[in-house]
Image (cartoon, rainbow, N blue to C red; front, side, top):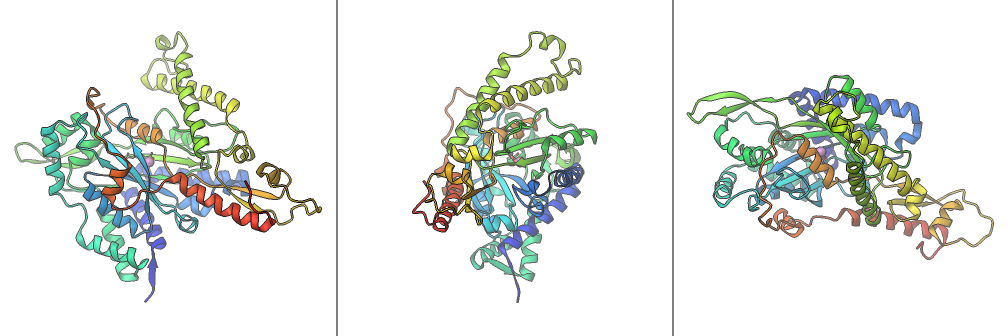
Length: 488
Ligand code: OOG
Ligand code: NI
């Protein structure tokens, strides 16, 4: 009996989730279509260079999703379902302090971690867990009722969890059970039609829209699904042309002439979706909730800790400078966006200004080429001995820069597979209706990496260590091929 491997389960799950989300959120279909147009255009324009950060096959199928759960127990179940598909928890993101509105969650991302599995299908899911124990958001009374509500619900049917355990232990599932697993898994993340208690939902919403989306309903759902695009600025323009209003900014590094690094993302608010509500008097009505959205991203080279420090530093300085250089007349005239005082025009003006400031900083301080990123040890690469390297009898030099410059070694970028806390907070925030309430006079509860690992029951992996290990393996191999003891 043929068995469906974890990699094939993951690819099939991503595909089916995408079909489901396309039925649920029509603007997502437009986004996927436009992304594919943009990618084909880049391929035509740039040829093979377009595939330097991933084959067109990989990029076309590539998605990330986001889900939100309420308790450590629920998170542990999610880990079993994703474990069945070869996805491991990587990275710890604490958005409680990163966001300016009330986002009471801590997060990780489930994703494949080996080169082979990433090549099969890199599907990843940003997964957030509510923090009811954080008194800045929830007082003791609300916390108690919230925890009682969460402990009474069941997100996943036992059959799904049993199939997941079997797939994880055996490395896959026989065809029929694979089919059953996929059906149940996709269903578990569909938007539920069960009535929502309006009063309870609204009580939570006053504290935080994210808390309401998680703890105000009896199920979880895929919150957005994000395709990958090779030119996000082009996509932004085209979506606007399709009449879809994007948020003001593209989050992450600025557009600039140097290498693409990390992650650039932008999003749009999905339309309100019809949801069944139970009114305080017991009547069941149809209302609408606006919680889901569309997002798109461009991925670049993974940065080392040093590279990341420089990125974070430039971002903070760009923010600071952009605030200082606000034109004196901007507040009166509606900014430089030219759309005359509308909040959107002003927002776009401010964001264009920030982009210009950021680009200027980057051009002065960020490594301007892949070679410089490699030599300054700011980007992650795999290194390969060049087949037709000069063999002029010189003893090989053992310094990375010289080996690259003399044509002995070739560097291939490692793609950033993770997320950025500031961008994630920006994405959460730009899609919330209200600010919510956060009492900063209180001390936050210590939901940290250790607690998250414990909740999941598995080690949360360090993304830097994964990239580093991949780079080191390639350096060892290259050194052997060149007959060097090591490449420092
Ligand atoms: C997750 C937001 C974070 C990203 O791409 O940074 C995210 C959420 O809204 O639940 O998906
Ligand atoms: Ni996202």
